[in-house]
Image 1 (tube, rainbow, N blue to C red):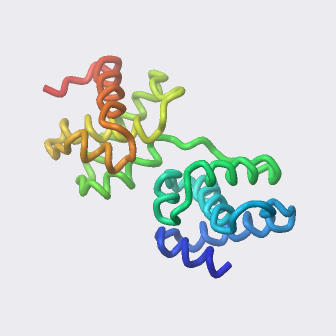
Image 2: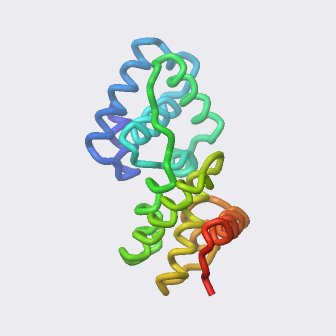
Length: 184
């Protein structure tokens, strides 16, 4: 559990999520899911799943970078825990990522609000179905930053969201076209 607290401190994870993560990890220990897996991998998986339970999104890549494990190892541990503990994890929504990415990009509140409004419209038009929530959030932030005059580059937004510039550009084009938004 010491390792869990150290890692959650590194990731600035709130206490309530830390406690949920500890519960998930203890259940995994009781079911002997940790056999043949690294402790770090299982701790990382329990933290990732706890964040998802509390709808506080943390990309897999961010956790992997902080803990220095591979995405493959983390994904395997996550799937193992999900399969044997029967956790009900809500799907990530692009809206969950807007505040976090917006804060990292030092966007003003009106730009974040505009991005959320754009995502609500996109959801209503069913544009978000089957798309990576991080990419959708990144594109909405890009559109909102242009519309509110607090422009950020596609590269800045892509790096923050941990997606490619091409993803931001493609989702941006879809949104502008389907939602009839004028960014000129």
